[in-house]
Image 1 (tube, rainbow, N blue to C red):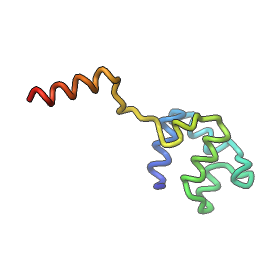
Image 2: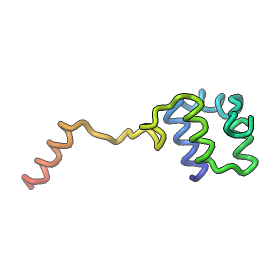
Image 3: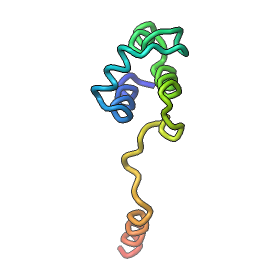
Image 4: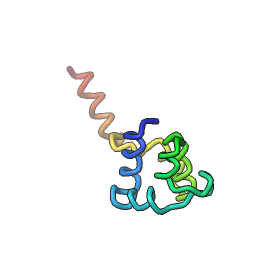
Length: 87
């Protein structure tokens, strides 16, 4: 995982301000009692850091791959299909 993707996931899940606090202050036992920032600086893959944060903070597994903002309501999807068929 790229660092930019990791930072995006953090901001989407926790908000930029709280994400910054978590990265700097939360000690993760799964990462040898390091903070997320320290683990990344020492070469831990951001994906491993992200998963450790998710587990530690109780993020639902459905969001471990990110918050899907572009999901449409089923009714919107049906309307979109009808519009394509009409054209």
